[in-house]
Length: 220
Image 1 (cartoon, rainbow, N blue to C red):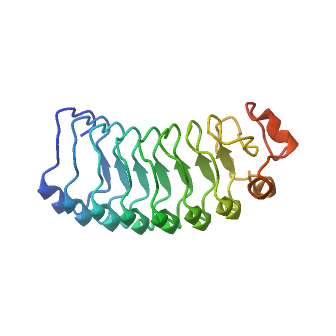
Image 2: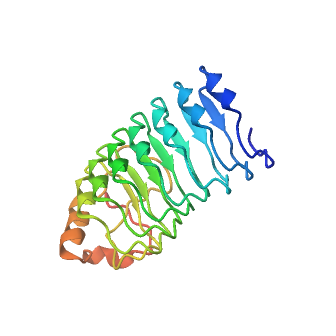
């Protein structure tokens, strides 16, 4: 259904597609809501809502998609995520770039399988919940362009497998260094958790953070 700009909603019968694994609504700019019956798509693995610019609310039933692996909410006009988002126990990738969310529910910390989380240019986002420290599988966290983000929770230092941390264009003062390998996923990389912890507790970054505008590989 990609690019169906006149589509305002899905029929309730969508819930009868019990074998559906991939649903792309990318570019459905007229889409205003998802039906509660989406909860019956128990084997759905990929849900793409990118550029659904009229979508302001996700149904709480989205939390029933226990097989969902990837969720894209890029450029959706969502002001918040439902608390039920934390029930997505299989979710590995969450893309929220350029969303209008102001806050995140504490239940986000229940996404125990989450590996990639991108929130680039979420300009209204003001804080990360301390429960982010529970995301022990998280390896890639992008906060570039989150201009209202002034602080990081102390719990971010508990992300011991974090390999990529992007902080350019945030409201942070002297953020800790980031990891970047030419945009290529490198499973062997690991962020300097000690440097992040030092920043969180001392409220200042190590000297190498003065090169915050440059690309730096912490593992060199």
